[in-house]
Image (cartoon, rainbow, N blue to C red; front, side, top):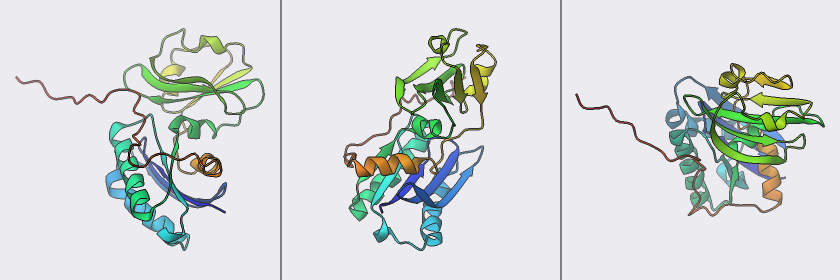
Length: 225
């Protein structure tokens, strides 16, 4: 059974798991208000391997959350994943961040799930999945208005989850919308997705793979007085 090291750093949650097939062997994570990935990620990797009584040579692949999300967080996770793949000669698997959020929600036929991340002000990163977690609308960076996601009014329920759900809750009042702000990207939910991609040999080119930022990074500087 394939052993995969899963790395999630797209948001404030620094999360590492080791999975065998679809099962989680070990999980280490800390969802701090301030990003701590540069200090904790490699510590968590070592702790996870030690707890699982494994070494790097026992791994079959490295999986990383590819975004969208924090520019710095994604850079840290992808850089670590690529470095491990190069040094260990292992394949690289990328997992869409919003997909790993969607699979945390129990969705039945006739329902949809919209995982979203806060992108500051009234903007979010969001996509839409059906009850089988098939993407029925591509990922977008979008400004929330009263008409946002009105196309999904025919679904019995639409689960809007993640850090972006809070701002939506104040604006969207369709009867079939349900909101859950507690869902965060985690390496725990990456396992089923990364294992399926491993079985399908869906790997990234380690040399050229880049995170899915969705928006260009803009460096903000203080104005001169």
